[in-house]
Picture 1 (cartoon, rainbow, N blue to C red):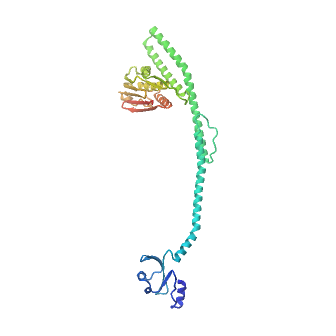
Picture 2: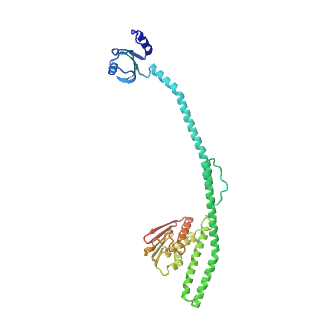
Length: 378
């Protein structure tokens, strides 16, 4: 309408101003409402489109030149019910409806693809988890399933190779422990019998004390080998089967253990204090004797001048050794190799393994001048 008016106005300046239901056309500001005339007069030379608010009403204003001094001003009062607003809304709805549908369809397809890819990847992972949960240290893995993805197959093969290698090492160690322990029993028994005969002979024949000392050392070494052999056999016995529990007297047992190891305190200034209730405990007797025997032996072996305290009841065992000689403060460290005549580190490793097998809580800690070992039976 404005273009037609401008073309006719160029030919005839008396051309009447267009009239429309939604738009109002002005050539002179005097014809405009006062608030609109004031806005136009503030910048009378601008052209183009502006959306403004005047007197709490929204307007869309367009201006274009008629000639050098005159302008055509088009004013549209924006309302939701106007024909132009309805037309614009209809146009926008028609224009954006396909886009909205395309976006919606794309979103649904994306969700579907994400779910599909997730399930496709999770299924092999679940199969890998189920397969690994069925593995055990007793059976060699001969067949690795196909888990679809090359990375998962590589992981499964690596796991199978590692488990098979561990199984081979375990079988090798188990065979060695079993064979060595059984084979040692005969020479240990023969040595023990002959030592007893030699002791009897030395008493009858009044053998020189110079021979008695080496004989005592041999006897102590045989005792050490016998205890180690019994420990290894017990650990290998029945693998992970249930452990039989019996009831026995605490006081007599701990006194017997201390008496068997007192030879380690010969020529040492060490006091042994036993605090034990006159009560019974129900657990596996061989494991109890082996564990307490190893700990008491280690405390005696590595205490040169000091005190060993043994507190024992049916719930807990607490063995503490304190050496007055500072050079032996760290001698009880399992990682230390000093003064280890019969393998102190191995003794503690065996103790820990037996406690794990019997579900006992084992802990050890450094204290001033020595070490403290605690075992909770319940």
